[in-house]
Image (cartoon, rainbow, N blue to C red):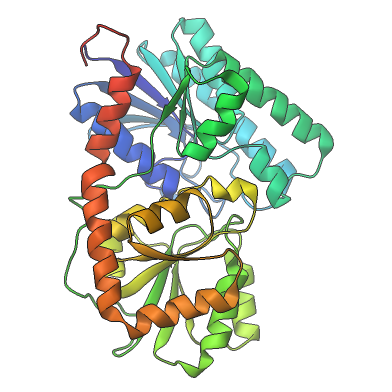
Length: 406
């Protein structure tokens, strides 16, 4: 039976990022499966913390995006490590989005994205007032991430965040986790029956193998290793800086870092101080340009930090790369490492190990046939298990009550 979903999220296209791409794909697949979807989100401002020019000065915007009805409300944009500014940003949208959610047609389910965790309060209040269940979609564990990364050090804020986290877990109708690690963490608090999984995936029709492409940032004869996404705190950027330093003697090897984020300024400064000409920085690119960027690269690189929290991550950038038949070099451990090793579609080295990461880069630079073989197995994997149609179809099957048709 068709259902009506209200998706509540602070981040949505035209912003570019993991959550934005995933939620956009999720919403389109809900529609493709016969359901009605409306989205309430903030004025686009990520990752620079500035509202996009075409939305500045506006309190409320209603628009259509790929057949989706989208309502955008006011936000105080903020990014970086200033905790107070970020809290104000989170709370401003949590407050401004509530009236918008109340004005939308009554949904069957409210689907709310966390983080930010504060948005769960909006979903809870709306669910009580409108007498509909809310589904909490957890893509990152907050405040655990904030504690481990040192973004929040206030014991009071952490105590409040942990209390709010557990409150929302108890009140949610269902909880959807992006990884098995997140599922295990939350299941220990609320039990298994509430838990569902919606892994990161990829549109295999948009992201597919293509002939080697040329991009303006890579010269003929250079072999590029690509990072595409947010340059944020969860990654150990010193691994790339250190590997670039070690590989000065290989002028054919270049690291291409595409995107923006709070760590970009530091990365640019450090690479300039060390005269690392083999690191190229490029502003974020439209999603439509990403297949060509993958095709121009030998492999993508994912340098995760070391720590228990990061063992349970599955960086979303892995799947479009594999769909384009490009292997992954992961500096990390845990769930992502297991995925790549079991399916033989990438190389894995210990987290924060600069020499081993550099050796993996050299290995694929010098053995293109191995890179192609890894990439082909990656494409087969995503076609089999990680297309959005497959992932969302399985999620909907798990959501429906016993005896109800999809």
